Length: 509
Image (tube, rainbow, N blue to C red; front, side, top):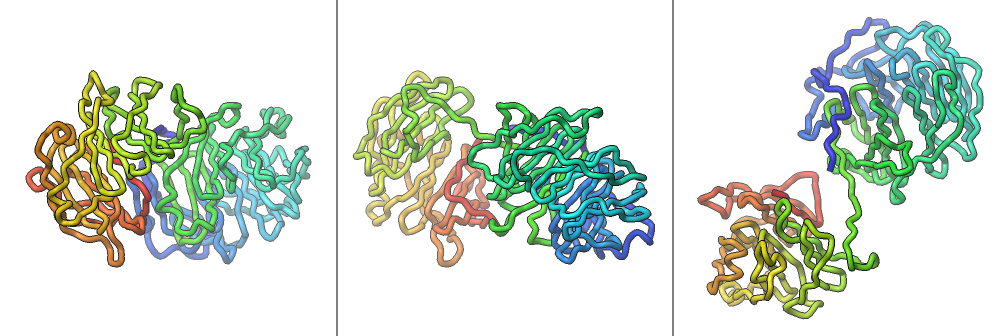
């Protein structure tokens, strides 16, 4: 994972800006402070007067256009006295173009108070997409790319010049001396050779995007950051997209931003914030502090074929440079891997391969659960022999006599939680490592509490800390166990995690 402070810190989440009355028709009834819902990852939900179909941001403000072509300027969302399908802003706010039913109009003599000026001038017709830099306008007409240069507040548009491109264009975006182009084949291109003396650049080059991504929207921001949204509504950014080996980082905001995966979002940036709209809700998301990105790297393991597929990977037994990583293949072959080594050991199973249901691990401990509810524990594990030397069958007479069959087990450092086939929860106090060597079986205690009606628990997960216990029901709802204390480890109740679902959970230390 990477945690990048990619944006300038903002002292105010939202600052109210004063405008002269003739420039706006009305304002949102509630104050900006009332319209904010902050998340602990830097994102803030900002209420809007209507659904934001399009967003455009510049140095001093952000604009949104609604379904009825009304334009509002934020952060206090004052409605302007003109309409447009979309609005394009230069980074410094000195150039403003509006796009309305294919006609691009440029605003002359833009004021410092917002996207208001003396008059509109027709800049181009048949326009499908437009983007502005501080002195240039890039736009797409019938799939062809055009540029207008040497623009200013007093001369906001000129005669356009076509920029050669081998493929049809869908959308263009720009920021300072960088231009991106999204083609109708959903290829992402960047314009090379742009300088102050050569505003149109020299040639197009392809941006290497991960093969599994289908680009839906693009944006360019400060600090050489490029942003994209794929057709699964996942947001990514890169700071070296001009490199052949560019890296992309995923921003994990999708779970609470998108309510309908069929609706594609739109993203906009300025010098100190990122703005995202899902186009179906009367709010947008803003980040003006820092962006956390994640990226998966392929792990190359010696002596294993690339065709090998994994059914389960268990890393709960890893602590810093010590411990064990356990891998169960789709063919139910068990492998052991140390975190400081790139070669694996094959571990013989204590049962038939097809009987293996799941694995659970803790430091110096590995438990194996079968489909019939039998548990095997690995013995002999330690720093000198992290893979252990043999298996032992765990005595489950206490619960098997009650016709209890376990379907999922999770080991913590000094506690074990389990779920049976009926959806009942059980807990056993004790170190999984010591239980593996103890001649006595652990005492299983049934746990009170039920999930939502018409559901039942299917999985439980415990962290390295005893008080961290999560669970899943058969409809992928997530629950957290509350009321767990050092002297009362059973807890008091299951608390539903709203608006979130999962198929698997792993808990880090």
